[in-house]
Image (cartoon, rainbow over all chains, first blue to last red; front, side, top):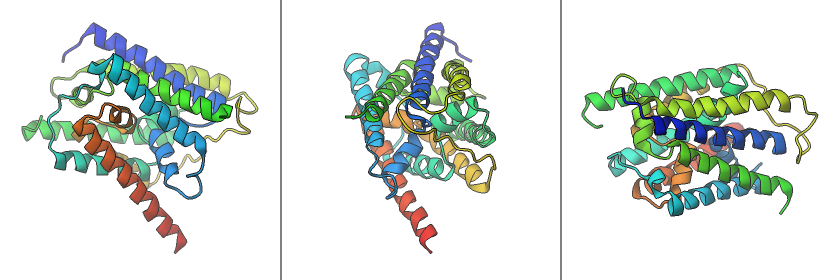
Length: 143
Length: 142
């Protein structure tokens, strides 16, 4: 186990910001901040014309740009994966989050906070499979 | 631009900056966090602690409001029944998350960095979400 105090403080501070963003989404707009659900709605004829979805995505991308310009190490990726593995991961995350009706934000933060049974189960399952996957990758020498 | 759209932009912005500050946009941190039986890096646990703390406390207050500030009604899922889609989907997501170290929010945030991995991962994820929505619609029209 490796523990760095600054990592923990950054994680907590970032977590407060993430929680505040999700809470504001509920308080101001009455919606759950779930990234996969908001993305899914962009490709659904019944909701693709909801402008707020595009505004949210644009907000995320703008935040990413600010990170890139002023805090580039925050977007640093040292994990070595080939294109095939990245494509496979993209398919699994895209399909899995839509089939499971949520991801780390909608289930992991909003749902767990609301003690939604579905979200508690989903979060337990994706955490367990994430841990299992990393364990397998370690054993196969991929990490 | 109306208040709903402006606040959505702001929430997305604050959310992605928070992910960046927290370390969620660095896949090596995510994989370190999931490496529970190896060299476990517990720091990202505190992202959940911080976020859930704010949301859970705030939710208790917001729940008592008749309606949100900018829109007509709350749209919070009321379904409490679990089903096989929830389990299968979450399991598939977990495998992809452990493989690349990206989940949807950080994937989208990292897109702005134009890094090769995030372009491939998030690009594929977006195409997959599109295909999923088509597939689901086909299922309901039959």
